[in-house]
Amino acid sequence: MARGHDLHEYKGDIAMAMKDVAIVGVGTSDFRRLYADKSQKNDVYQLAAEAFRDALEDCGATQKDVDGLLCVNIKYGPFGDMTGLTGPGFVHDLEGTGRMSGVALQEACSLVESGAAHTVAVVYATNGRTAGLKYGGGDADPAGAYDAMYGMTSTGAYLSMMYQRYRHLYGAPEDALAPLAINNRANGARNPIAVFQQEITKDEYLASRFISQPLRKLDYCIINDGAVAFIVTSMDRARGMSKKPVRVAATAGRAELGRSYISPDFYYATSAAVAEDLYKKSGIGPDQIDCMQVYDNFLPTILFTLEGFGHAPRGASWEWIRDGRIELGGERPMNTSGGHTSESYMQGFALHVEAVRQVRGEAGERQVENCGTVQYMCVSPIVTSHIFTAD
Image (cartoon, rainbow, N blue to C red):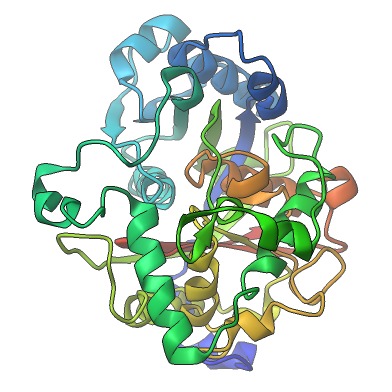
């Protein structure tokens, strides 16, 4: 999908768009507070319950209004018992991986559209910092035991290999990822709940030590504790709630499954197929997007995403992101909360909340002016994307 498409190019299949589903309530932990207090051992279910409570309060609902529950990285039994949500009509646990953030919203939308549930709570929580998770370096998954002999024990190692290939093919220089790291930190500095709130320079980025060369420490997501919840319902119900609903104008996804995280074309073909579907469903193309929330477990993922979804030319996203284009006040502001390298690593879920807050105009110092459309994109073995708009 190339940049420069006009809105009329996507009108042909607009009848397929999701026209009647919205996110009405959102809640998150105070990631900065949790990270700063290293003495505090956080219970993952307590964190989840607090985020769920805040999401309900945000839209003026109670747990009695919720008849669908999707739990990610936690089990619905303990969560339901803790929150009093003991009799929902539909429940489902999803694995605790970043690709599930897009899938979870898609499932919630499908439940509401089909009538299987009227109001769905999506709840994610992690206590990765408390539990001492390392996300690599230990025993590999048995399916990847062969790769482990070569040190491929983490997603970061696979991403470093893909990025090395990308640099070779497209001539990306050593500092190609610096604008992404700098942008995330600048946005984190505007976000009172972000873990990292200190801006960085290009020199500081380049001085960051290598973890899996060519990836540096500042290219990696954070390991932290926290929770996120959002409430999904129909637009008809949403208009009677206390906050302005944020419409899910369209969503699309496609898998690219294999034994490892490696994709020889950086998930380009899969992403382009998802993009084509999404833009047709919504009637909105890349040039109509006011703000982007891009899944950034590792910063090269952003380059792959921008190209696959038609925001930047193939092989040139590392040039496209320069000169302020993705900064607040730029042509297409990105990861306005600080993303996974500055706000928190909530595996995509907090990026959904930031999308809602931007459309509502609730983002404070990091608010994008006149923000009417936000696109979430996740490039991974399950590629997903949604477009959010005001009612």
